[in-house]
Length: 367
Image (cartoon, rainbow, N blue to C red):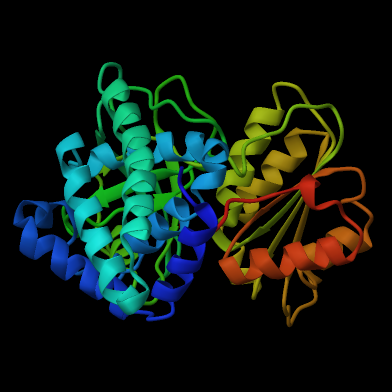
């Protein structure tokens, strides 16, 4: 019997050592199993803490493992794109246990070791089984041709890709992308369209400081180039069933999944209000196509807003504050997407204004 409480306390102790933990983990993994090095990007700065943090958090909460089985299965399927095989999971488990033992010091016991080994075994088996099953019906990734690349400004581009075959995803889900300009580095992007008959996918990309992939996609990628596309992940932003109103709150390129959701809602219209915010009017980079979309649907209201507009042509204020002030969130399903700080501040404002937490839908950052 796994003692989940003991695992949580032990993980808390280990995690208190901060960046030393992932450094030790990867050093151990690559020294003892050098064949695993090719599964990871050359530059480990962004990757370094993701795997070990996720493993520790999930495994130490093994008492609620049933609740995260769908997430683990999705991770297992998704990790096929890295080249991860069932045979790699024991190597990761050995490195994880060695890391835990090292940072536990005198608190490490045979009982804790047995608990961690058993808990990791459950997680690894769930992921590996899902990956093996997926191999029978879908590839680990698709090679997609860039068929259009519109550079909106120095930081933003709208890119259309054609994977040749239709990728199975729901509006609001994300796809992971990799370019050979940044080998083995994957980033999440949410399509700006519902699935199309021709299979093409529209992506909105904003280059961020230090963003290897986003900078390459905006500045270096050209039509005719090939991108590698991983399977769809995440359900935080997928449309919930119902006939009630919908309120959408977007910041920056967070407009992309909202556009895809609008296209989906068009098949069974519900009154929808879309608040889209940016720092300045220039940040509303596709405002004319969005206005055209709103003009085409009498059930869709578009409210663009900015932090400051010198000419006073666009509403000033945050999208969440305006949505609440206009009464558009009460009784509605609310969807949030944008920079992590904007999503969190908007969520807090909504909850503080009396909106039920379970009616607020977003994709947690750091996936």
